[in-house]
Amino acid sequence: MSLLIAQSSIARLVSRANDALPGISPGAFWFVAWVWTNAERVRRGWGLMCSASKSHLPEERAEAIVQQPVSQFGDAYAVLLKSLKERIHESRMSATLTVNRELTTLYWDIGRRILDEQQKQGWGAQVVEQLSKDLGKAFPDVVSFSVRNLRSMRAFADAYPDQEIVKQLVSQIPWGHNLRLIQMVKDQQQRFWYAAQTIEHGWSRAVLVHQIESDLYTRQGQALTNFERALPVPQSDLARELVKDPYNLDFLGLTDDISERELERSLLDHLKEFLLELGKGFAFMGSQYHLEVGGQDYYLDLLFYNTILRAYVVIDLKVEAFKPEFAGKMNFYLNVVEDQLQHPDDQPPIGLILCKERNHVTVEFSLRGMDQPMGVSEYRLLPREVQATLPSPEEWEAELERVNEEEQE
Image (cartoon, rainbow, N blue to C red):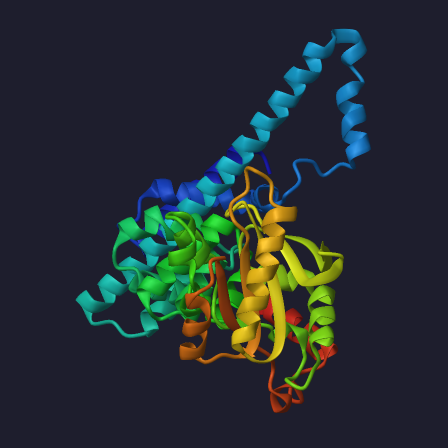
């Protein structure tokens, strides 16, 4: 189809869509029509934004492409080419964000108009079905105006009455993320928090769902610690926000009757999931990390470095209830790490004791005399009876395929 024919067709669709939903600017429909006709480009742009890599080519090929003309134009050309590529990547990411913001704002506008007209005219649910039919005729190649999606837009506008909140916060995350938020989180402040965390950490939809299901909002910053006494401000505030209670280790597929070595080995086998549960800034340094003190050998269960705190984090695993001597052992470990591993620019190391159970009073008394910063948290594993009811990997795969098909409708 020629450009003039395409523009003429889109113009007719915009006119018919505006008749179906008066009050929404034609410019918004023009924008969305462009998005739909360039859907593949938009998806590729979003993929670029979420990708940690700046090139889809193997590194050797990318370097070869850059280096090829250097002999002809000199080193300045390589510098120019590199800077132009970076600028193009930045522009693509910016365009993708703009597309997402405009789409989300449009969906809010549609939902708001439906809500207002239903209240004003006394219309029932049938109006949504009629709008779906009329908009479907106006946009026959688009599935976004299905009854289900229009209801989602209506629910979205109902969940966020203030359009400024939509523009400033939730329009910065994909539409699918927003649907999960309004479906799974009823408290508005919690939704704001999860949306902000998604923006800050670049969570995928699957990660967002996992964090909601694991109740991260209420667990964040809930570990029992001595950070206020052992760390200066603002380091104490940062450390407190990075630890949680309890830690959700359901992904291990283990039950309570395990040894510490089995727990550690399973965490290493699921290191990616464990890093996600630990939170932002954690880098794995080693397990059974060797320290030598006074001619004797000692081993840290797990050693991490947190790039936000700029500090080592020692994790001690206990498959039993917390005991006061655990704090004394951790204090010793932290003293040694501070002496042997800490760089002059690092902040004091932090200890985290992960145990099966803990008594609040016992922990408070145990940490009171410790000079090194540490916290105590419980971990949660799947109860045996729950684990027995879990679907098989094949069943999980079939369910994921079904969900993906529904989302494409």
